[in-house]
Length: 255
Image 1 (tube, rainbow, N blue to C red):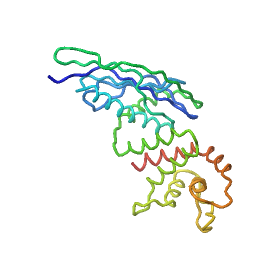
Image 2: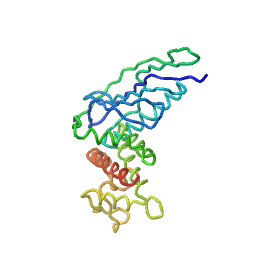
Image 3: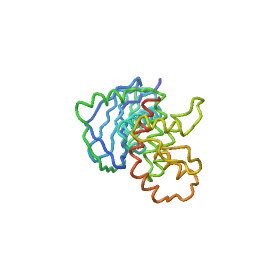
Image 4: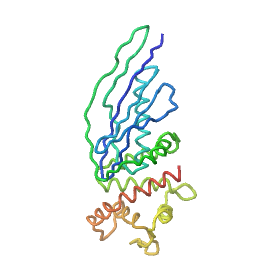
């Protein structure tokens, strides 16, 4: 007789950086037929909490895998929607029971404390919650790879690492007509989405202009004579969250 696993898995995700968004518990629907419900909550100055309730998973391993995949999808969407720096989902509490051959046994139990902090704290307005729910339930698979890249980029502690990873996303999403990476198409997209223009001449080819975002990226990614890397780092610090907005826009438009 096959087993039937039901119960809950609770995950927490630490939020770092300058931006923090909070909302009351929100129930999310899923097409995963053995999942009864998903509840996500983001209280002010607390980790994001996700609780996945299973009604009839075929095994504990299936429940664990499904829970992690679901949580990654949801926090990836939240990271993209609000520019959050969300860490990897951590299994914080496990309450699963297995029913087999007329017997019921507890299969997993445990808990782990987490901490969280943020500076740009804002409660998500009630009128925006419905749109957030719809966005979290939008399971387009072609976007999820880039959401994961974005979330990992935003996890970076060092802003230079974060900046370079965000620029990499733009390079992947803004290729030339032949599908090859080419900076001018990244700069073109930046010009279309912001007020920035290609006004900075390349040191090696003065007739080629680049946006400030590409200029900073190239000062770190390439050997450029006379570059003050301390100044470059400072400029990246001041622009990394704007670059994050551009990367989010690229994911929304191009996937």
